[in-house]
Length: 179
Image 1 (cartoon, rainbow, N blue to C red):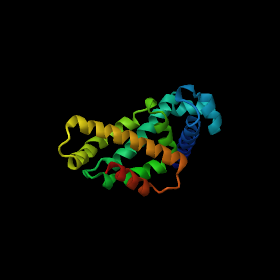
Image 2: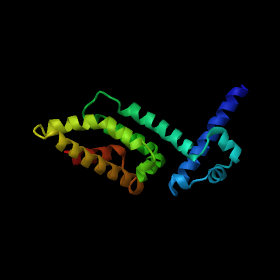
Image 3: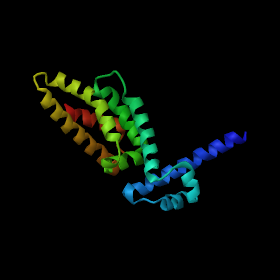
Image 4: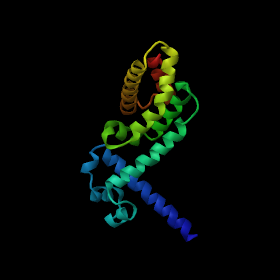
């Protein structure tokens, strides 16, 4: 019984640390965040922070890896049609809005966008081949770059300025842009 309580307490403490860290990360660059700052925001002492993480970079990496795993579970599908998985992906991004905003704000500090884009690239290019059968591979690469950057901008602006718009509607907007 005490193991269950201890485990719940540990999970709760880690969740609080992660939530407060994400709040701080929305305001400051990762390299400028201190353990002292995270600990104060989470209402814990620094020793408790160090029990779970070596530094803010390890904390970020753990959060990012968990998020990437969640996303990959949703988009690793055999479906080639973008409309079959884009809505699900946008729901996940909306449900994890704080992390999504942080990652989209400064993609240089993480690997999330690269992982997601590499996974959806082949599916999206397959869609381009169907729409533009006479395009060269170089042109399809440029189409993908254009679409990916546009999609990232739309998603970021949606979450920051129009979060009340349902994810499925944003999926329709992106699919219409692709068409």
